[in-house]
Length: 408
Image 1 (tube, rainbow, N blue to C red):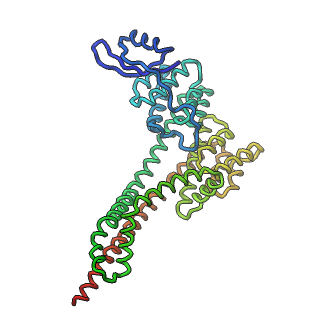
Image 2: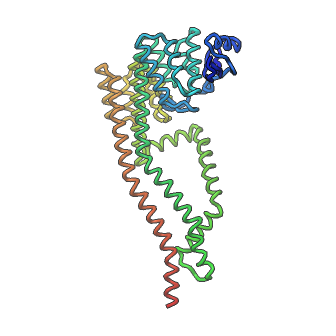
Image 3: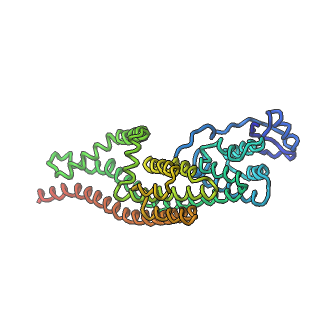
């Protein structure tokens, strides 16, 4: 059934806006009149999130104005209402009435209408893959099959909130260094491009041999002031070209291997990937998704082709009777401690809990490493800026000192 946006007037003349479902435009207007609203404008809306392929990324995505926090909040509300015994359609109606994001409101209204027509919640969610990932849909499907949808939704909400909090800590740790970098870069650019040339122009007009540092500073300033737009254009073209080339399998494979092999960032990326692997697979298994199916889903969201190959190989090994720990132990990207913990979890029958412990451990290590890197980065940035400023000052003062010696 179509979903319509409306604008109308109530009995007191107040303007009201909202959405509703109806079989046609005429039916929508009749529905409004029966509820005491005089329709001024009624138009059908379409989901903008439909028919878009799902790519690798987080459990709850930030796309087209629908934030992951809003999806987590909706999931938490739906879990609470279902746990209190409210039927699914009525729960969705209550959530729609409280939503402030019009786009997300339309999406949830279409999900409600799909459920009202007899479709499952998992199928209805799967029609919006840019908002609800395969992990989300499969966990909901498992919850519907086991009759514990409210419990699964509660776990999904916890998962989304946990991921959001982790991203927030990362951003907070990196905010100051990134801010300092951009401020320093802008200050140096303005200094070299606009201020220094006005000072060094005096030396050029004297037609006297200038020291090498002063000549270099003048040349750099002239180049930046004349061709700064070329540099900016080259940077943009390079970024776009890299993004296009990166889609090729060989380039993607090389880039993913480089990300895992860099001296400082490589171990950090390994831990981030392992934390995502453990947290997502643990949540899937805890919701009743089979191990092989869970691995196939996780392989698509780890965002690294090398790790995806390892997981795909593990699926085949498990189907042949091998353990998950035994298969992962053959990969250099899974640490021995993580493999041992998975082995203990398989032997004790508590694989889900052990995967969550692995994720907790890796996330703590990632956070501590990021804090250590940022604490190292700040003095390095200050030192670099000090060296550049000292070079500029030295290049300006050196010819002045030479002229003073000549005058004497």
